[in-house]
Image (cartoon, rainbow, N blue to C red):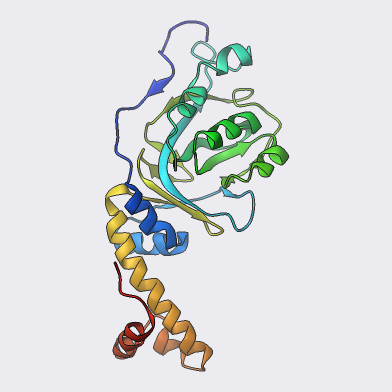
Length: 257
């Protein structure tokens, strides 16, 4: 930074994280189901387009802790003198804000030239209890990061460090745009092989209730289809067969808590 054109890093205001009960309740809900149920509730842009899991089979559910990159402008902030500059940015600051179970959600515009996080920072995030990372962009040190075993969704890899090219770590704990989706600090993130979905914090209870019913009748419908039943009768579950499903549910599934 050459002068104080703008005071960095920018930090957002206080916010609430979903409680452990809400996170636990979402634990059995897949990204596809969460996305579908939110669509039914009128929230249509929830799928983070672009990031894919570094390791197939990864899954995470947790509160969103956000990090925002912005385009570089040399009179405000640039990537020159990396070691002297980056440690005073939002990239370092957000790591000190991590609480156990957080999912770091990073706005990076899908940049192919910005290594938003590397081995050392991911390692530190994990040690502080972070549960996973969703990056609308790339990371570096891919082999070492993969060995850490932390669930990560990103658009790919690059040898660049975070501020080497076109972006600069600007703000944290602020609203971010990731893969075409608005993510607010404290929203819930559900990510698996289908991708990452942002669940508005105030919608978690409704999503859980709808998802539980959806996944239970799907289980019933799979059984009937495997037995040779007509697809049109059981997927989606035809109202005429709802009573049959309810009887099966009463006999085979524990009561909802």
